[in-house]
Amino acid sequence: MPLKDLPPDARPREKLLARGPGALSDVELLALLLRTGIKGKGVLQMAQELLQIKPAADGAAGFDGIAGLLNATADDLKRVKGLGPAKRAELVAVLELARRAMAQRLQQRTVLDSPDAVKHYLQLHLGARSHEVFAVLFLDAQNRLIAMEEMFKGTLTQTSVYPREVVKRALDLQASSLVLSHNHPSGTVQPSRADEMLTQALKAALALIDVRVLDHVIVAPGEAFSMAERGLM
Image (cartoon, rainbow, N blue to C red; front, top):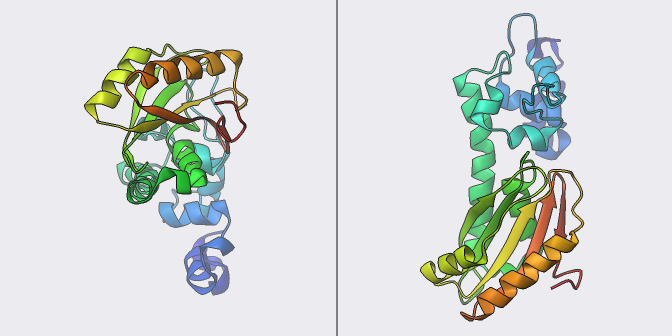
């Protein structure tokens, strides 16, 4: 049904203004971003179908929910009929704004005071990636964020991480401590024995330059596992 045919209190924009964003479903929020549908398909139907796109047999990315969609790149969105350059740019911009807002929060206050914010921030960056990425949060003497850098990328099953490169970058940024992170595209966030061994190797290498490893966070869509919180550090 076209938005203009809905009762005023059921239209996403009016509903949001009257009751707040929490009253809207994922489909309704996405429809607000898209604004218009295409010929033969209303914006609500288009939003619903976007959220249900599964990975294609040729390896093309699927979205399968709001998190997957908002972690999609502009190139991923090109194959969706009805998403022109303007709509693709708006969807990608929403996620980037969220990332920057969380980064600003971590730069203004100590990471140790907001472990949940750290996990959410890393989920936004890495959670929906289709390949494995190893990232590092470099922190100052007050444990505030200096920079988050993706240092190594691998396949779906493994990545090569070189401790000397992490040490070098920590020295370049004059970091006092850091948080390690990587994603598990398989969806499980439980650390493997290799993850634990890598963490210990990095801790030992960084200890030589008096830089502490505060945590190693493993993320997947909708989940995050803190090795420090589980006593694995």
